[in-house]
Structures are given as structure tokens and as C-alpha cells.
Image (cartoon, rainbow, N blue to C red; front, side, top):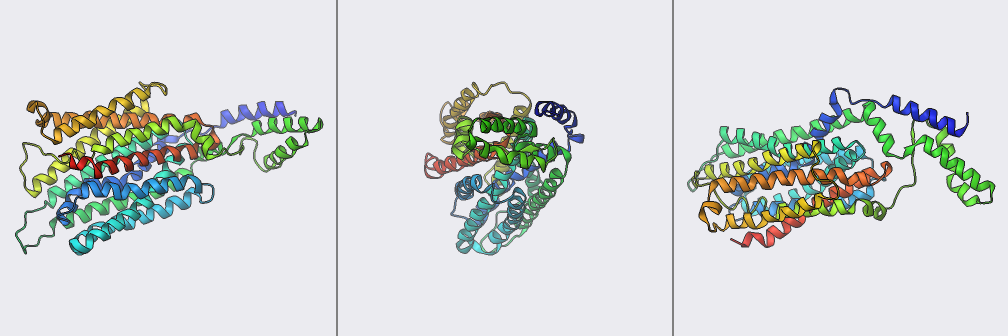
Length: 453
């Protein structure tokens, strides 16, 4: 059989043998991966009232965002380059186990170490939590980049649902174990017990994520796309090899040497298996996905300049000023964000109103939420807008749904600009810019926006 006939035969067989995602199992598990990717941040954020109560005189709402996302940002960049030296299995397994242990440690440190000792210790724990999360998050986004668009959308939807799920768990623990205003010398462990149960649930979810990953990589569907992501189909390698032979016969021996290994590798594989093509450099992949990556960065800078700090530096008129009321205000505001952010992410996975060339307009439009959020914090006039509960909720809802929708479109579009062999690295580049946006936004918030009021 000639090379061209074999290529045609192999192509037809590959298309007919492409496995299906039975029962959408892999899709649902990718939602679970998305939940796990942002779980550390969402767990800390949703329980921020507990840390305010545990560390009076400090500002966890601003400091924690910076302390967690700074290391996350730095090591997401490192993750891009170690991908070919450390397997995805190793990176995910170690990072998720570390996150499990560190998450459990946080309420224990806050409750038993006191303010003077506990505050620096918990900041160190959050730094290591950020490092571990960078490898888990980068691995998950890189892994999803190997699959069709809707699986990236599933991860983004899971990111949003992660916050919503933690809000629900936090509401339950708050209702059962409400914080209390304590007189000097009085002790009450109800807030600690509720938070310990809450972080225990978060830790359990991380173990389920790890189990889910091993289930996914064992499916025929995942094996197909993992192999496809490693290079072009085997039939393309045959045509390259044929061209190299032809070049060699005319004296171009360098070309023959460059490609001669392809046939040897091909003989070791089934005809339907992919042959790795030459890996692109970091800058080559970045050039392809950079415009989308920069927009992801900008999207999250805009969001984290005012969230959570500025949004939580206000109040609802219908609530009082007790510890319980402040805790419920925090939970209600973050729940509003997570509900609408999840809606935006879900919509972005199925309906792309903006194309890759027009999505930039949505990214820029979201700048409007910086002044509106600051005006709410300052109780500016007109009072019927900026001092009203309805506008606080409306502003948060619009802010959140646009964040979810915009970020999902960008994360879907980014890896599509490169070839299969480089999609994992493209996904990591996108993840790096996502975390970078969170870090820079938190940095601006910590050292600038917090002093606006």
C-alpha cells in the first residue's frame, strides 16, 4: 500500500473510531475539576468573616487575596516550563494533597494560636496554599486545553460553581453555628466548629477531584484527545517522511536526518496514534495566544481591583451591625457574585455572542465597574443610586455576570489559536495570565483602593 493510500485509509478509520464521551462523564468531571481549581481561594474568601473575627486589627479581605494569589501567579509561570519534566499526574497529585492539608490547618491556626502568633503563621500557610494551587490550577487548565471547546467551558463553569457551592456550605454552617458578640473573657467555639466543618467539606472535595482525574484519564475519550494533543495524526508524519526522503534523494541530507526518526517512531505505534511534531518555543505559542491571554489578565485586574475588598467595605441597610449581621452581609454579597458569575460562565460555554475579534469590546466595557463600585463604597450622591441596597446588588450582579462570561470566552478562544501539540502549554499560559490578573488586581486593591474610603 502506498503512503498516500495508507494515509487515506488511516484517516477514515481514525474518524470512525473516535470515541464518545459516554453519558457526558468526562464533561461533568471537568466541571468538578473547575470547582477544584478555585476551591482554595473560594473557601478562604467565603469564610473571610471568621478570619476578621479571629484576627482583630488586621484586614484579611485585602491581605489574603494578595498573599494567596502572589505565589499562585509566580508559580503558574514556573508551571509553564516544567510541564515536560514533571508529569501532570505528579503535579496534580502532590498539589491537591498539599492543599488538602493546608486547608484543614487554617481554622486550627486561627483558633488556637491567637492574633500575635497566628497572623504571621496563617499568612505563611496561605503562601504555600497559593504555591500548591498554582500547580493544580495550571495543570487543570492545561489539561482542559487538550479537549474540545466545551470542556474548557466546563472548567470555567466549575470555577464559578465552586464559589457558589462554598457559599451554600458557608450559609449552612453559619445558620447552625452563628458567630456571637462576646464580652471580654467570654469564650464561644461555635464559629470555630462551623468553620472547621466548612473547611473539612472543602478538603473532601479536593480528594474527590483527585479521584475524578484518575477516572478521566482512564477513559477512551480522554486517551484519544491526550494522544491527539501530543502531535499531528500518524498519517501526517508519513507525508513528512516521504518529503524528507525525496529531499534526501536530491542531496538535501540535512532534511532527511531531521525527519528520519519519524518513521522509526511510527513503527512503534498503531496507525491511528499521533506522532509528536516539533514542539514550539514558549514565545512562539505566546505569540499565537497572547492577545487573548492579555485580555484575560485585564479582565481579572478589573475584577480584583474592587472585589472582594471594595465590595465588602459597605453594608446593607436592612441588616444591623452585629457580628452575625456582618457575617451574613459578607456571605450574601459573595453569593450574589458567585451566582451571577456562574451564570456568565455557563452562558459563555454555550453561546458566544462576541467573536475572538470583538470580545475585546466587552473586556474594555467592564472598566465601568471600578468607578461604580468605588462610588458605592464612598456613599456618594445621588443617594437613591449609590447609597441604596438595590444598586449594590445590581452592580454586583452585572459585575459578576460580565466577569464570568468575558473570562470564559477568552479562556475558550485562547488555546484555539495554536495546534494540538501545544494546547496544554497554551492553556497554562492562559491560566498564568488569569492568576496574574487576580494578583495585580489584588495588589492595586491592597495598596490603593482600600484607602479610597
